[in-house]
Amino acid sequence: MAEWAEVADGVWQARYQPLDVSVCLVRGTAGLLLVDTRCGPEEAAEIVADAARLQQGDIRWVVNTHAHYDHTFGNQLFAPTATIYGHHRVAAHFRDYEAAELADRPDVVLTPPQVRVDGLLELDLGGRTVRLITLPPGHTDTDLVVHVPDAGCWIVGDVIEESGPPQAGPDAFPQGWPRALRTLADRIGPDELVVPGHGRVVDRAFVLAQAAELERPTTP
Image (cartoon, rainbow, N blue to C red; front, top):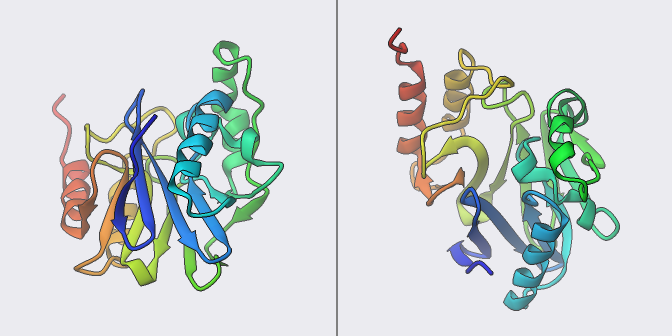
């Protein structure tokens, strides 16, 4: 069980172990939007139980911030009752990278987003509009951020990591990642909050600092 922290008006973050994964809920009058689904159906069921304790409504929408297993492998639990949104390249990424994880996770059925976002998509949660925005390739080529304008809050997945250094796997684009972060920072207001994929809430200055860190040459 994880504790929810209301990081902005009607926006909650829970930090789940293992991996300190950020899971977020955004409230509208028509229900809840869930951001990221963890590592499998058992962990996703834990999210459902924890969300029910908030008593803020049912999960009607799900967003994947990127394709990695620790953010998407719980999708199958939500597909029957919620609409899942994600970057338009998630299905291809599943095929090329994440499918290799299935040997150790026999309970997982790869479930790509039902709605594939390319650019900007706005969702009406009832009395609240949420914006889904795809980014240039950086942490992966499937990065997508969630902006809740009336709460001054961005939920950005692993393009930003606070509890550890940015993780660049074989599917990362290290040369493009700083540019993706600067593109994102150009959209973030000076007083807006940023929820990373792992770790505590940060701000625009942290985004720019991580971009600068990623731009530093690595030591041979």
